[in-house]
Length: 123
Image 1 (cartoon, rainbow, N blue to C red):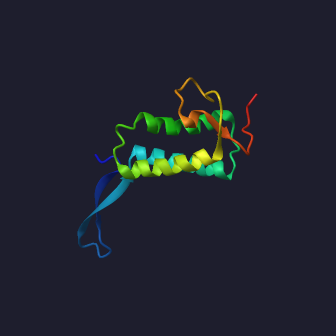
Image 2: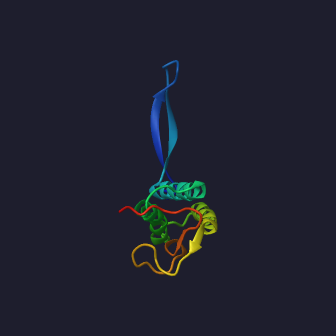
Image 3: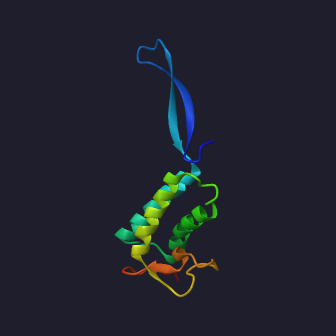
């Protein structure tokens, strides 16, 4: 299985109904879906994030998942997309002195917060 997508082959009849035609449909892999979710999260931060700190850390955990699976993600295209999203994310976040969630090692995405928008804390 390719890490970027899965090929699904199906048969269908032409409009005339006289032939079966084989075609290939592209399905995104779980990693491609995670990268897309991470890119959407970064874009949402750029536009203004209205969720609580709990949703924020949950969304940020997508990036942690990608980092933890770095060895499996050998496709250059995937890492180019992640690195571009990382650059945009770093521009949006302000460094902090402590981890915003859990006790992760010093990874920039756990040691930064949004600067121009207050994230709601439920309670």
